[in-house]
Length: 140
Image (cartoon, rainbow, N blue to C red; front, side, top):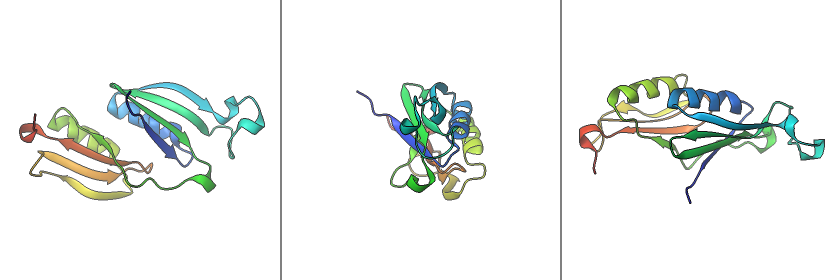
């Protein structure tokens, strides 16, 4: 049994998840829109293009997501999606793509005592990220 990350968005789920798939090399799987529900009672409040559920395979991990009706959306807190790029160049590429237009930067890319590069930010879609490239400081 492996946990899956489940993200909620304010109406831009498909755009966000497509961006993540392109940046991180993920593969979008099933996408179910409000309009795919068999009847109006099975739909969530909002437009027909809202995403009810979708998934993206990212390596061995499954990332799932949906839009939240405006009255049900709450800003993510208490967690971060953590990515460990394989190289410094990959760290810089991923950081540049995900942190562009970030809504907040808690820690700009820098060296720490445990990693050659580390950063924490919340992207333009509201997802909180943590990037960590251990490099020569990585522990086995």
